[in-house]
Length: 170
Image 1 (cartoon, rainbow, N blue to C red):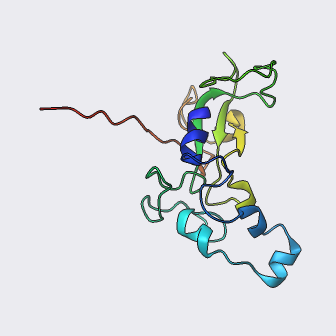
Image 2: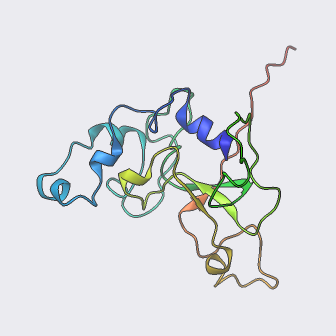
Image 3: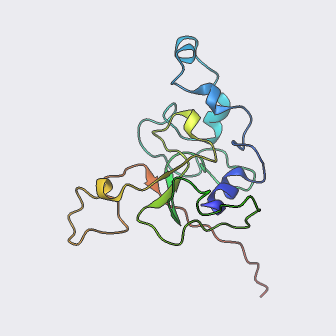
């Protein structure tokens, strides 16, 4: 989870790696719905409810963040290996700095980070977090026992494989 947020921020300390504030673009605001907003900047970087036709989009069709990663805050929410807890202060009770936090040691649901093609701009910030809903997301899974890796009823969650580049001399 922490690694995902670090990659999404791409070296910035802001909630968004691109210029502007997606919270000011929200469709939840009646004033924005009435007068409209300039979505040109966010549309360059992220697929979300305002520019996607209600489905995922091919990768590499937007501009990447500073580290070359595409659609970090949008297109699909991203499944993380960490176990979910709504209150991380339970896991890290003191105020000391934690390097590469791993979250709780066990749990029943995993963390989901970011937003998706179905998200409002206000929900695309790097700190956006939710959890898996395994029982609800496996209702129509035909396998018995049900899969722990395929969420048949979640259409806007995916995962990303990222690893460090290792230069090899030949």
